[in-house]
Length: 253
Picture 1 (cartoon, one colour):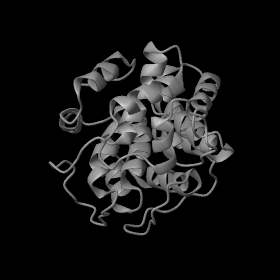
Picture 2 (cartoon, helix red, strand yellow; picture 1 turned 90 degrees about the vertical axis):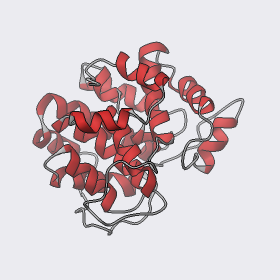
Picture 3 (cartoon, rainbow, N blue to C red; picture 1 turned 60 degrees about the vertical axis):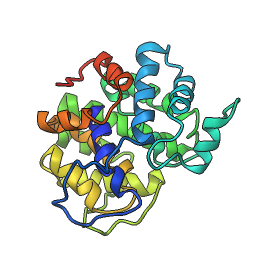
């Protein structure tokens, strides 16, 4: 779960100003958490403290942090400010970027699939939006239980064709259909957490969200270096750190 947040923070300064340089500085004063982190925390809080009321917790956290770096997307922004928020048939990559905790908080693949779908439904009730969430959570669960190779083989049932990570080759695409083949292409090529994050940013496109999804899966495969953890945690407010500390299987530092 922390991997998703780290990918978001590192990618935040490049979302609307892509870099194609692989050896960029990971953390600078221009970095911040974005809506990706807020939504990720909300899903964990829903399981740990909120009776799995995913929509309720999502609405609460996003209203608590109404103006994150980069803002919220148009349809989701309207959902956030609504007094009666309803799903809007989205197939955007937001369903995949917020689901990381589900891969850590449940003990069977069946539970992971069911709960991942539930996290998507408050907003992303399109089949492609649901698929993105389920595939991401399942990838995390399978990677931490069985390793990278086994996980990638199983994920082919969702996304059989992956995109080779060529620096600067990716266009801005906020859909699950456009994002997930990029994500799994990066995971397939990378050999460490940091390398995966660098590819996620340097391919271009929706940098913070690709970073978040890649980071969530990369954490389950390789873990996160303590030096990267420490730098990322410095960007987070205490209420978010409190949720991270409550999340089982997450070693903060």
